[in-house]
Amino acid sequence: MLRTARQGINLAAAAQNSHAISGSEAPATSSPEPALSAQSVALEPLPLVANVLDGVRSLIGVRDVAGHYLLVNSAMAEFHGVPAAAFIGRTPAEVGLPAYAFRLLSGGPSDEPAIARDVPLLDAIGHVRLFDVVSRSLPPAGPAGPLVLDVATETLAAGPRSEVPPARDVRGDVDSRLELALRNGNLVLIDWDIATDRIAASSQLAELLGVEIGALPATAAELARHEHPRDRARLQSELAAHLEGRTDEFYCEYRLRTASGRIRWVVASGRVIARAPDGLALKYRGTLQDVTESIETEQELQRQLARSRDAARVTDNLVREVRRLEAEIGEVSQRERERIGHDLHDGLGQELTGVSLLLKTLEDAIARDAPQLSTRVRSLRDMVEQSISTARALAQGLSPVHLDRDGFAGALEQLCASSEALYGIPVKFASRQSNGLHALTGAADLYRIAQEAIRNAARHSGAREIRVILTSDDRMLSLMIEDDGHGILPGAETRGGMGLKIMRYRASIIGASLEIGAREHGGTVVRCVLRQAAATDT
Image (cartoon, rainbow, N blue to C red; front, side, top):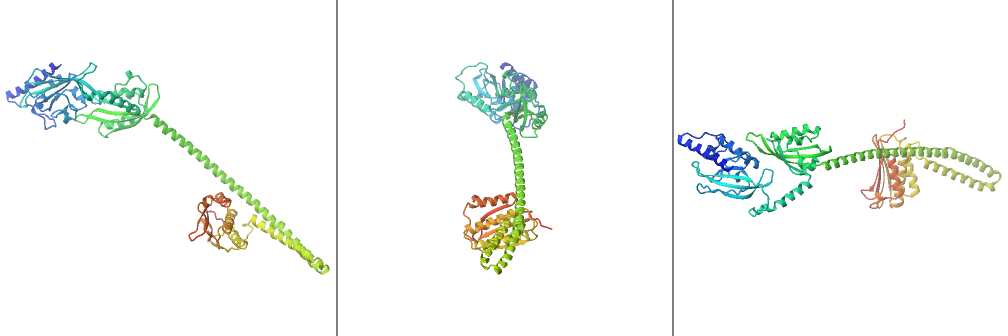
């Protein structure tokens, strides 16, 4: 093998010498690298040399004494994942390769080669492989002086070697950490030689596809057979866009079908790491990440969210139904209270009024015929009048709004007057209305809220004055009860006693909002707002 390589180099040197003897110049090249040496110009036009070296699987490079590559074979370029043209005129460091153990011979021609055993070299997919490297000095082939031929042959024998640099001793530890990282991240490393369609993948691919290591896909076409048919067109389109250079990085989420038929979700990401001078993609490096558990978890969360939304809709429907039933029960109760109130006012009240009138007539007759009985009859008549007042109060309590011919505002005004007489505190009423409120939905509940607010202010706030303000228009009704007392205690507006809870409940069943808080200039304010609730009699 070494002999064949040397023959190729000697052919190149002889060809250059023949050009010099005949006085002809070496053919010009179209290489974009202006730093090419004369040796590279002489060696590049010889397809015979290239064909000879490309047929050798060892890594072969020809350098001048300054370390610049003049020629490399295809095995060298493929091993490092770099186009062959990128080597010419550059040193290993300029190409981005690690420091080699190749020795540059500065002396004259010698038949004694320099040999380095088990040299660790890093290939294009990040694997360290061991090579025996032979470096030999060749006779001068031109003005640049002697050439150096490097031939690296991969070591096939296994076993410990003391000559291996210390860095190789930690390779097993690095591999184990890499294996752990790949397994924990559900990652598969893939290198793809696009020209040959061959792929090299880490062992996690076997686990992902559910196959034995020996049955792993060897080409991208074989791996593509596992793609889900519904995702294949999208996947191939996005991959083609990256290979053509239209995207900086390839990223695609799609489904794979395992050997057992199970569907796995994966995320493919990576990029082209080597291109030909014309931009054609040569090598691709990337990963496949199994995200099935994440996708399934997300789908389960979506299902749970959908069930939660369904449950929320059912709950909302139940709440609306409860509200409707509460309102209906309230209306039935209010109608029943109104009926009883009417019966008390128009039935029992009228009958008692008739009894009072009869007693008045009887009282006049007794005053003439039996004056000694006048006092007893008068006492009896007073008792009947008291019963009439009690019946009227009960009737008004059961139906305070509809029994008043002035409607809701009139009922509130009468409430303020009776409360002032009852508690001995001024209770003022103010009304600003743009429409009448003779027939107001929820009027009874609003009246009870005002009644409870006045009672609380009179009994607990130490107020010197209470104000009830009614405001309404076509869009909204606002009922406000405020006092100038010592104010509501912190937290009482949210905690509250039974009276406050009943007020909030009454507001909720008629769809009103209730706010209880501190008054700006001291005291407490209760505000109940009912939107689009006003309805007037015609």
